[in-house]
Length: 250
Image (cartoon, rainbow, N blue to C red; front, top):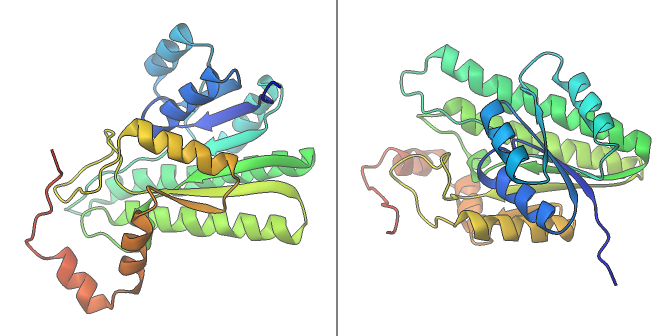
């Protein structure tokens, strides 16, 4: 018995977890499309694989309507995965840096989620997947906009899920909440429980297939998330401002 194939569109599929997911889905015979800003990476992937590539910056004003055009060009989709994200350390709290993060991680994310919601609502079925972060749990002194944007993404994803449930639609909404993954986005000197990209991708794909509402990658990160969420403010402040360095395991 052949496994039913799907049409999967991944926003932020040129690198990291998004790219590895695209490769895994394509390897199973699914029709896969990726969206990204870096044209040279899109061209490289398109040349080497069967994956379709589309240049688009989700931070642009017209990104929602442009995304709808891409979905049409794909011949429709069964799943939309939003993996696009940026993180910049900003110790000087320069607004230009904060604004760039907000434009991609908040405005761009909301535009992509809304476009997916509208498309699947009209279709009557589908699967929306948002890749957020453990960073959604609390604020961060060196990347305030990043952690705040991830909290926005998490809350927005839940809001869309609740709305679809009220509407009794057959549209799944999954939030993937990674801890540290061995990619270029993993920055800082307190990295621990680092997962390989392959392990994170396999676990993410499994959670999506099971249509879980929320999944931590890996599972043990739920411990950190809950500790962070419920720590009193003075404890969290002391922890974040401490000089203890948790070094990444070699």
